[in-house]
Image 1 (cartoon, rainbow, N blue to C red):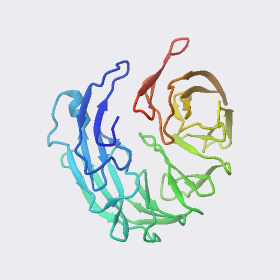
Image 2 (image 1 turned 90 degrees about the vertical axis):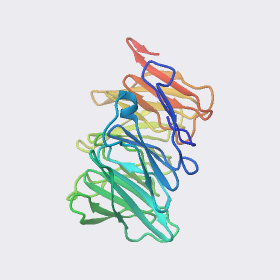
Image 3 (image 1 turned 180 degrees about the vertical axis):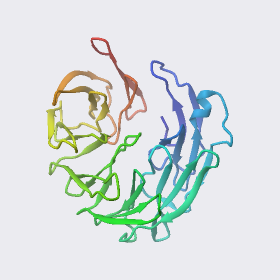
Length: 323
């Protein structure tokens, strides 16, 4: 957990007290959700990213060279910092009236090495730039729907991808998942995993609020209009299941199913078996309300979520049911 002022708390499954509790110096509040790569936690501020070495703290041994770094942005952070979880870190910034993506490569012996900034085309002053990392490709775009791409291996530009309407970033699962993007018309698209592929239409349910999560390269999950949807880009088609109400937040996929938390504090467990979605349990996790942008985290057999008062709640699958 990372607080808005940079306070880090690390929890282990089955324990109620943090095993690590430290402060990260930020210039101002947390500017976007923190991201992880190679045992490192990158905590974005408005002018710089502070990199915290969690692996060193949890293992009790230091790494050479030291892996904790401060990465100056050279501008104002305008949207979420993104990573591929292993090698690349990218931050959309404004420098004066110029929108660009700052890019770093993580090298074990040198730490984060800055690369030349990527300046996508067609971004007007004042528009909010978004960035996505998938495979060896960096994509960036703003309102208008044009996504400029860069091949990180060759530094060559990629063919422009066109989406009608403004774009909104969605959460990205670590370990090689392919991110989904949403247009102003509530259409959902999957970014191409390789440069020779094109943008793939995934889902649309006009008028419904979408909270999306790409489980892995084989499946996607959407909570919209009081239903949970699961689809497979390879097989095609989708299945759906009615939820308790229409305030469902971002689904949290687990092997064989998903957890869904709603803004009223109710948590629903869903299984996927033989092509069907089924309810397997439901419990009130919080008495208070849950933030609209909350995304639960699954660790082992336990799901964690934080309510609007800063309380950490957990729901653990146990033999014969849930608890």
